[in-house]
Amino acid sequence: MASSAIQELIQDVDNQLNGSITIVVLGASGDLAKKKTFPSLFGLYRNGFLPKETRIIGYARTKMDRDEFVKRTTEHMKLGESPDAKKKLDEFLKLTSYHNGQYNEDASWEDLARYVEKIEGDTKQKNRLFYVALPPSVFLDVASGVRKHVYSDGFVNRIVIEKPFGKDLESSRELGTNIAKLFKEDEIYRIDHYLGKEMVKNLMTLRFANVLFGQIWDSKNIDNVQITFKEPFGTEGRGGYFDEFGIIRDVMQNHLLQVLSLVAMERPTGTDAESIRDEKVKVLRCIEPIKLENALLGQYVGNGEKPGYKEDDSLKNKNTNCPTFAALVAYIHNERWEGVPFIMKAGKALNEPKVEIRIQFRNVSGDLFKDTPRNELVLRIQPSEAVYMKFNNKHPGLSYQTLQSDLDLTYHRRYSDLKIPDAYEALILDVLRGDHSNFVRDDELDAAWKIFTPILHEIEQKQVQPKEYKYGSRGPADLDDFVRKFGYDRS
Ligand code: NDP
Ligand code: BG6
Image 1 (cartoon, protein in one colour):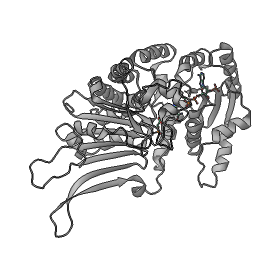
Image 2 (cartoon, protein in one colour):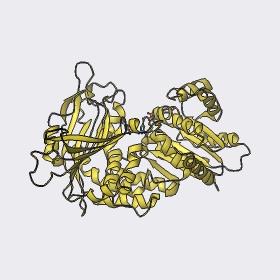
Image 3 (cartoon, protein in one colour):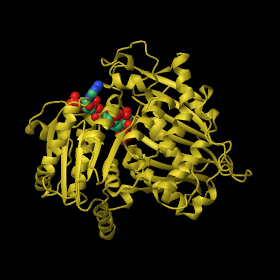
Image 4 (spheres, protein in one colour):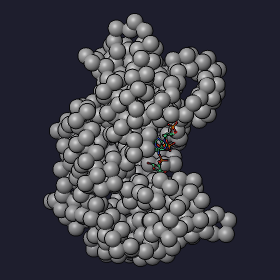
């Protein structure tokens, strides 16, 4: 990144926080904290984005001494080759400490408040950021304990909440109403880490900074859109959590729908958070609830080497109908998208890791060339970020045959010195800068749940049985027929 752009970001953080912040990571003993939160904070520190006076306090119930805390928080940090990485890490660790206590006792929160005051010492600017890296069952207890006892009156307070935000429209509204009693909307950052991914952030630029895409981005030119999420591993050890939520709540109602709204929204009036989120909400409100007849559900079974979903030891209900795979089709009823299927596909224990957006254009008119394949624009979100366009070219040489080829912008080939920060690093920086653009607003969440709640309830009430697919396969056998039915032409 150009050094002027970096300076601007650092300046933004400073303007917001006057050079001082205390970051309290609640749930510091957990998986997210160790894999993402602490490594991202370190990434921000080593790149100079944390304010001069930063203090980082881990909080959870687990009792841990300093060595154990350091071991856990550094386990997933990538130091790389840089000779001063170790020195930077030592400096970073000096900013950190750990305190243990309960989530539902006033005495623990009072104790944490005293501890925070002690660590802050005679700092004049007592700005505080609370990162809730905890299961949803304790979100409310924690938010109210923090608000009552650890909130810093007269200074900046921000609370970051992780998904899942509820389990359906009703529970999400209830959670939202209760949190709104404690924090103002502009203090709340509902994180969806897909909004921090490079290619997802690129969607706005690609669509609105290129006259060429602006002209063809509609139902006249686009036949269907596929948003695909594939993971090559199962729920191993996470079955307890997963079985309560399933793949639709785990990644589709949030990550994939966020991507969809950025693909489909109208041009915002500005790049500020409210203008972008206004457009996202508008397009979400044009989507009718997804119908069961437009869904294909799957659950993985063992393949001889790897166990099936039901064999996961952490699973209590062995008769579960929880989908670990789903393909769902959404329709947007507005002038731009009427009739275009948006096919969202997501699955665990599939054949490869891949997240991509595939926009398939309509057939060319006439029959000048025989069986011309359709153009496709693909944005690969991960692994290996890329934008490529499948287009048709004359076979070079004497032949007049048509040949499908690619206009390929694969990032690691095109950009030397490519260093894409982790999504969490980008998003925590946004929180420090007070920028909500890449966070979910309350009405956006409401609109998202309206799309998914009816089908989720129907699956539960009717005990719809998912189709089996083998661990490591492409998904249920009917998948190709399913996407073909909605217009996808795999030529
Ligand atoms: P964990 O299961 O690791 O829990 C985090 C911490 O919460 C634990 O270390 C434990 O701390 C405490 N805890 C666990 N279960 C309970 C319980 N039943 N009651 C009270 N406290 C409990 O969760 P993750 O770190 O995986 O996830 C945290 C949040 O982040 C969740 O909302 C999750 O959906 C979200 N998330 C996680 C991702 C990941 O990669 N892990 C990715 C995206 C989102 P202690 O006992 O020490 O208090
Ligand atoms: C999380 C889901 O939100 O996203 C996980 O709970 C999933 O089940 C993860 O594995 C995927 O994130 P990423 O960044 O690895 O694609």
